[in-house]
Amino acid sequence: MAIRFDGRVAIVTGAGNGLGRAHALGLASRGAKVVVNDFGGARDGTGGSLTAAETVVEEIRKAGGTAMADGADVSNFEQVTAMVERATKEWGSVDIMCANAGILRDKSFGKMEVADFAKVLDVHLVGTFYCCKAVWNGMRERNYGRIVMTTSSSGLFGNFGQANYGAAKSGMVGLMNVLAEEGRKTNIRVNIISPTAATRMTEELLPPQALQLMKPEAITPAVEYLLSEDAPTRTIMGAGAGSFAVIKILETEGINLPPEEWTPDAIAAHFAEISDMSKARALQGAFEQTQKYVGPAAARLGIKLLVSLSSRARASASPES
Image (cartoon, rainbow, N blue to C red):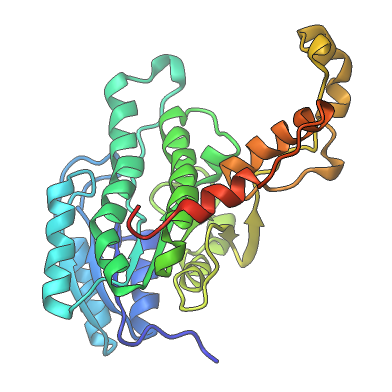
């Protein structure tokens, strides 16, 4: 059965060009009413114009879809809130948030200005928080919501000259992890895409032949899946040039040392075993790590844990929390 978004209202930020444009067109082609948001600034976030967003809206309407343009700056919470209120008043709800807007201010760390670090975090990380915050209560009330954030391999794996961008993008993963947990009881599913595509941000970095393979439209199917009715939650998906993958943050099995060996020398002696990836796994929450560490230490002393810390933490959560 084909994935459709009939009756759903979506906001796509940074939708005037590149990835956002492809996502907006894709969602609209599958039945969603789309708010095409774009501040219309340059790659570094300066300037501002509604022209790019209006052009995408016209494309959607010519294809028989429904859309409106919005020029909210995602780093301004009042503007983001007004955008969500406008869409809700016009179409009744906001069911889907695709947080895609971004800027670049690349410099090696030694040369990076504090203002450039702060601005990139404001747009990417804080802006994503604002977008999620503005739609969150409405999604909870309607017991339905789908959110996709946009991370990057620069944050997940590192990239020279992008301390600001990498910090913001990896910060989004932490935000996604928490919102996915908090959204479970009200059917809000939160995921994150790590795209590799030919956009204004990558066009100067790759040869033309590679850029031809890296169309933004190759990312959109993954985004549509992560925004669909039957989407997973708390998933990092990589996509580019027709390749799709799931990315996990793993922790080794590790070891538990007796108190007399709580020394840096003992860690050095056991580091090969501590860092052995053969049994590494993805933990499902912060308290699972706590239990993983405390359990063996307690067992060494004959202390029995009556209930798993992760289960207790999850059981105490509620929609009112």
